[in-house]
Image (cartoon, rainbow, N blue to C red; front, side, top):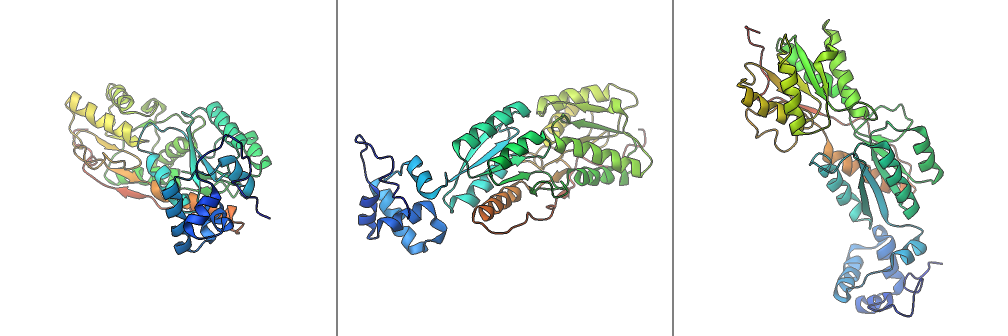
Length: 351
């Protein structure tokens, strides 16, 4: 028997519209209102519209704890991102929210600031609050974290990565292959002196995969990436500027700089203007992710377009399927796209 969420946890001080008030206003039974709140996917759209209109008219707010007791679901899906300080993960979050909203779920969002301990604390708090499912970014974390999630029997999915050999459900793309693709583009243009501005690779398998992809593509052509030509920095435009200055102060200068994220490339392009370097005549620069400024910052940034929104949509769809008890498999690795713009060209003959 379904527990009536309006009666559960009721106190003498409670006021406002009740579930029964909503049912009378909509001309339906209280059980139908409960279904609309707890499992909207099984309710006919016309019926749900009547209940929604009544809820809005009466300003009815169901008791969260009571709903959890009634449905054995919190209707909350956790999402922990490495950072919320840029537009990079915003598209993924927006797509996730859009996908789960029609099923009555709300995202609970936190940022780890690329700190494994912060992520672990957020995770513990989310599990303690009773989230129904969880989305994480990347796969590089201690085995004890995954044991904790599985012990609580919470469905989870990893995004922004692919190829964990079936150990974890993943919805993402191959970072190594994507970085190799942009490297081959520069090699095909004739570049032989490379440098890279990379995010920290410790506890970040996305950055590590991108560095490995660059190295692998160079090795295919008999080249290596000198460790002194790899600058590791926290993500940011100013970090890209500082790294560009360091790289161009060393001889011989690179003719191509591969950036592991677009903000690095933005900073590098801006610093080239400061130093009087022409892009791409004196130096080719590439980014990663095709963020909103990439097409507009002169001369236009050659970069990798990653499936940011698609990852959020598919992650939400996967978690909803698991919560519905359906047998489902994550999709194959998603596609990325090399976007060629004005920041890359053949090396100067004088280089």
